[in-house]
Image (cartoon, rainbow, N blue to C red; front, side):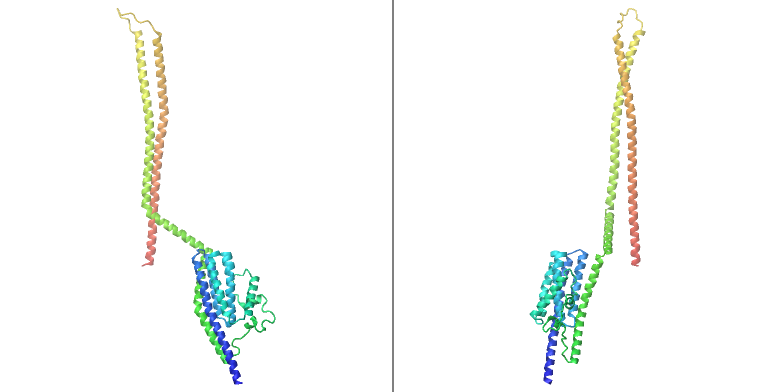
Amino acid sequence: MFNRASGADKAAAKRADELQELQLKVMRFADEYVGGVVEPIQSFQQTTNDAGERLAAQNWKLSQATSAYTIASGPNPIANALDMVVLATLSRMVAEDTWVGERFGERAAPLRDAHRRLEPRARQLLVNVLTDAQSAQLQQVIDEWRERNPNVRAVAYVHFSDFAKSVGRPKAGETESKGGLFQLLGLDPIGDLDPAVREITQSRQLAERTIYYAQRAPNLIDMQIERLSYQLASMPETKRMLADADHFGGAAASAGRLADDLPNVLAREREAAIRQFMDAVNAQTTEMRGLMTELRGTLEAGTATSDSLTATIRSFDQLMGRFDKPRPEGAPPRRPFDITDYTAAAAEFARTANELERLVADIERGTPALAESAGRAATDLQNVIDHMLWRVLLIGLLLLAAALVAVLAYRGIARRWP
């Protein structure tokens, strides 16, 4: 009887060792799984500037890593292996259907390829644990659950026992069926051991699982902190704050460029003011030159008219002298009266009167134009002077503002660095 008990204990111990080896395989694969998912996720985040896309990728990375480490730290090695296969299979489906098929296209192809590589590696955990019939039953349950839940995206925390119940499994009698898949879940891997040995084994396994998870907890915390930063970056308030910061930076850069270019601005404004003043003077000079030319023509016409009038008066005096002079003795007889002389004199007088009238009209027309040109010249000159005064005042205000900013900055630096 002692030999039979010893044989049973040895078989139970061997079974416990096999399950412990399976647990270690699951733990090692969990590290491999997390590394395989993190690498394409980080590459995806580096290729996008959209905070929302980075947040979605970080959520996927954090949920996958947390689920893998949680599964590997479970108390039942067989259930842990089943859950790891479920995680790898459902995650591969979501990567194909959602990440590549709906949201990001070929940009998410590296993540899909990574999940396709990890799924067969996960199934290797069950090679010596499940029979072919049990593996087929597992795949049937997974396909049935996915068919009923095609729109579920968060599959990281879906465990085999939970989603099996959602599809009505196990059915009546499947848990008691020898060799069935669900019959494995009810087995106690160390139930046949001596109570003292069982307690020691359970304590050792608990310590191993605790140390395993504690060693990976900092990585999960880092992922959570990074996720928090992406959440803050995607918030509307943060976006507005960053936009305001960009505007402030642009304003500061513009102020710096203005300060650097201020001497050139002053030189250009001074040159523009002088050019505008000289252009106005040249325009007025040209207009005055035209008026002087017209006035000279008018005066010349008046001179010609005056000369014509003098000749007319002289002719008239000669005509009147013919009537006043007595005929001297012995003088030859006078020429008979000729009406044509008087007609010519009248015509000459009429021409003289017409020219005098035109002269007066030209003077009247030239006088208002000359006065208007002089008024415009004075107005333009006053506008140029006012423009120069405003530019000088604006430059003075800019210099005063720059000095005030420098004083405030100096005071702030002085308070900070006593």
